[in-house]
Image 1 (tube, rainbow, N blue to C red):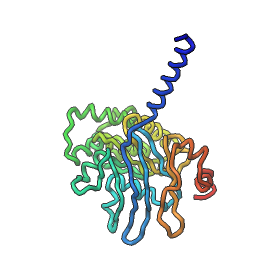
Image 2 (image 1 turned 45 degrees about the vertical axis):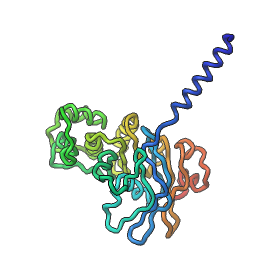
Image 3 (image 1 turned 120 degrees about the vertical axis):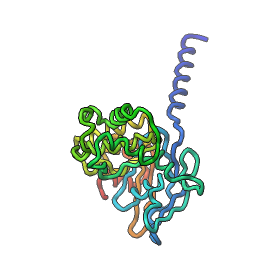
Image 4 (image 1 turned 30 degrees about the horizontal axis):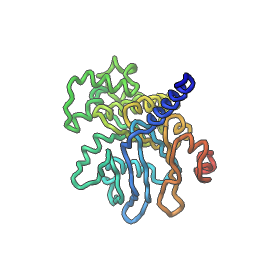
Length: 279
């Protein structure tokens, strides 16, 4: 084999490795998920796959079912009065709504961060981080190490390491949201759902949360609802655009790589939305 042929074969092999590296296992999947509140259908036929260790953004106008959908992914939806669901939500290949599945176990593996920070304000910063363990009955050794690890992962350690025994209510809104993220991480989830986690925060705090999301996605799978198109572009590997016509249930118009959804969408409605023409 000549030197040129050898170099060509090496390049071809490197390309194959690169393609293989792009293939990620599916951590979470929905199959034909439809959702009701009493007799009102709010979502119809949602089919999505969430690749392991990626960030997926859910975008779309208010009222199209994004927050409802994200709540179906860890069985929070079923806690609401009149809620019903059809279809399957598969976590690591198994339906989380199966009759023998413990919803508490699901919510430990698939954590949730809500729109407004919800730490326990009178509890200490350290106590907040460890509260998830106590509530779930999980046993973890070396609490000090766990507190430092999770606060570091949430991008908060350097700001609070000297006041871990202070009340969480003393923290700013952005710090409280990162504390909530640390609390969620303490139970070692595989997936983290985030429902507009930056909507109540200032730009500087938002940037820190976004940095945290990108760093966390190296180890866990993240699904985020956002109305901020720039945020979706900054943090998400994949994006799904939800829409609901008047009087009709929400559905996914288009989904794919974030670069494609924002740079080369296939549906005119997607193009109009990401360019700010409605919503």
